[in-house]
Amino acid sequence: MKLRNKYVAIWGVIASMLFLSSVLPSAYGLEFPMTSQIQIEPEIASNALAAQVAPALSAAALYGSIDLAATPVGAIFSSEMALVSSISLQVEMARTIVGAKVVAQSILTDEYGMNDGQFTCLNKLWTRESHWNYKAHNPRSGAHGIAQALPAAKMAVIADDWRSNPVTQIRWGLRYITMRYDTPCKAWSKFQRSRYY
Image 1 (tube, rainbow, N blue to C red):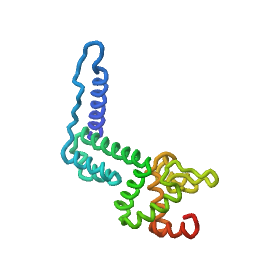
Image 2: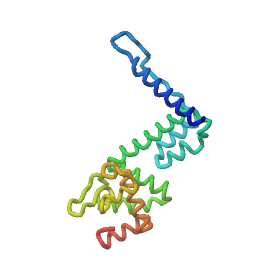
Image 3: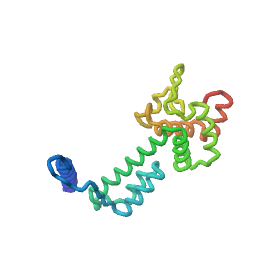
Image 4: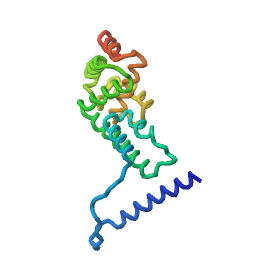
């Protein structure tokens, strides 16, 4: 019964959206206010704001305290929108060198619990490898991305968008480093000795 009610509620939202899209202001004289208001519960709104600051933790921040059975569908939808927005902002930010460094440092600190010294080593390593360019590609070896994964398809373990998503590349690179070398500083030491890591 709950599942059926959920689908009825979702179809109700879709029908409302279709109605609104069909009666937008037009040359036929229909006029509606051009402003929209979305009401988000205060707790969800503050969690969504926290998700903007730390997108890596956003899923837990947004859903950790929500009772899905008691929460209106609109509130869950707004939380999902905030999560998607947060992730999109993180990806767009990481398309620049400075943004990629900010995202990597945030993930390294928040998810791996490493300090600024480890980020310094990571910065040196990935500056030498790719200059933090998510489009970097070595035509001879086939290495690709910020972390210069070889073969590049290995990054699919994180996500299929590894060719164009710098956050996927960063997450794969940090995973590789911690699994193989434990820390970025140990990976940097290996690179200094061998010119690869």
